[in-house]
Image 1 (cartoon, rainbow, N blue to C red):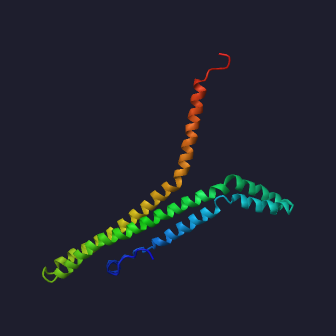
Image 2: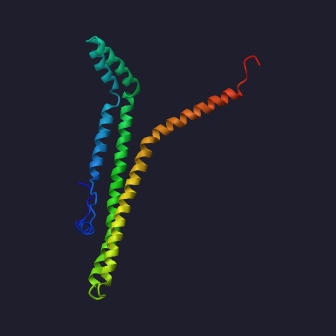
Image 3: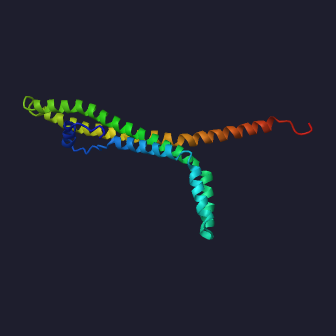
Length: 197
C-alpha cells in the first residue's frame, strides 16, 4: 500500500468538504515493474514470434493467409522490434506518475496541517473573541479548499507536462535527426562542385 494521508487530515478534508483523490502510487510502480519485465522477456524474441507465424503461414493457404502474411510483415518490419523500448518508455511514465502522486499527498499533508492547526486555534478562541475568530476560521476553511484545489491542479499539470515530455522525447529526437540530415544534404548540395567544372 502506498502512502496514505493520515486520518486526522482525512477528517479535516471531510470537514471542509473536500474529497481528496487518495490514489495508491504503488499501483503505478507495480505496473511499471510488470511492463519492464515484459520488455525484458520480449526483447530478442521477435524472431521466435516470426518463426511461429511463418509456420502458421506455411501450413495454410487462401486469401485470409495472404492478408495475414501481408499484415504480419508490416508489423514485423515496423513495430515488433520497437515494442520493448515503447514498453520501457510507458513504464518510465508510470514511475513519474507515482512520484507526482506521492508528492501531491505529502504537500497536501504539510500545507493543510499548518492550516488545520490555525483553524483549531481560531475555533478555540471563538469564546474569548466573541465569535470573531470563528469568522476567521471560516475564511481559513475557504483557503484550505483553495489550497487543495491548487495542489491537485499542480499535480495534474505536472503529470501532463512530464508524461507528454517523456513520451514525445524519442519522437523529437528522430525529428531533429531528420532535420540535421536534411540540412547536411542541402549544405552538401550547395557547396559541391558541378560535374566537369
